[in-house]
Amino acid sequence: MNTKIILLCTMSIFAQFARGEDKVTIRFGHFPNITHAQGVIAHALSRQHKGWFEQRLGDKIDIQWFTYNAGPSAMEAVFAGSLDVTYVGQGPALNAHFKSNGEEIRIISGAANAGAALVVRPDGPIKTAADFRGKKIATPQLGNTQDISCRAWLKAQGINVTQTGGDAMVVPTNNPDQLGLFQKGSVDAVWTVEPWVTRLERQANGKVFLEDKDVITTWLASSAKFLKEHVDLAQKIVSANKELTDWIQTHPDEAQKLLIAELKEETKTNFAPDDVAQAWKRIKFTTDVPKELIAKAVQDGKDARFYKGSTDTSKLLQSP
Image 1 (spheres, rainbow, N blue to C red):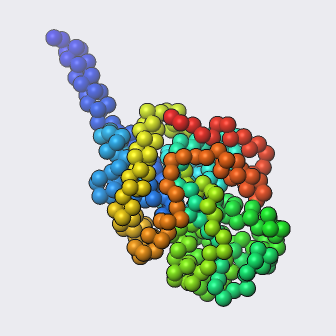
Image 2 (image 1 turned 180 degrees about the horizontal axis):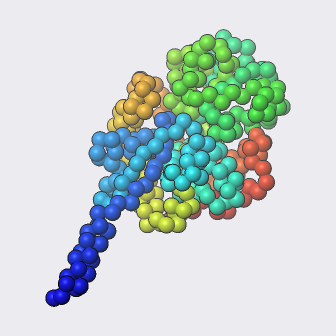
Image 3 (image 1 turned 45 degrees about the horizontal axis):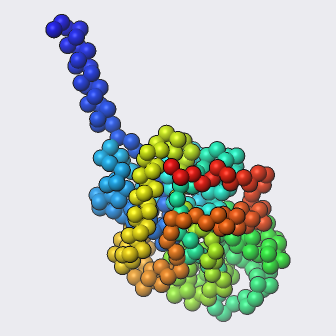
């Protein structure tokens, strides 16, 4: 065998070895909320080297986890090409979908419905919807699901709000900061998700004024690019998410233990098991994405003046 052939064979062997060693990295996002239980629990298992998605996607897959306080930040990461798949609320996902003219964001599965509420101060003057006039209401982030729900609901009550003021003031506030402001009286109410709703109830004697049950709190979104280039992996992700959702429903105690430990790791905050168990009751973990709730979400976004122009959702849902 001459030198040229030996060289070509050697190069081929190294190329095969390199291909065998190459891994596909999937950048996966979620928020440190109970309503993102699938993401939080999967992140916990990855941290323990027992990765839920890793085991079901294969040895050549590397998952990197990223946490966000609220949806707009996660959608910005998708637009920037630094996030492939994420658990996210309906508001930011829809807003991003419309801003990109339906070209960037795809919903590949559901994750959770409900689990959100409007909480008021127990000793405050708010007794009816009209009493929110002139008050300050905290929401997790401008344009996130609860922020849009809050603004749309206020408008339906005849209370006009803008992004900077109006008849009432909606104040975007990070979830961990809401409790302190509520306790100090710096805000009159908070529209947020679990576990923060239960914390407001138990640690600040907050009173649930309105429980938002008809809302897609969390779904699983993918960048259009990732879905196009890795449809096989997207299929496995959807299947693994369904399996994890079923496991959460049938193993609530074990799921809650994993979730509490991971939330502490991510937020440096202790969550009492009783609080998490109480919050769990408000959430419906499901992979379904009801079309009637999508229609409601689009209308809420319009009422809150966040969605302008085309609101075509024909490309939004895509089962890989």
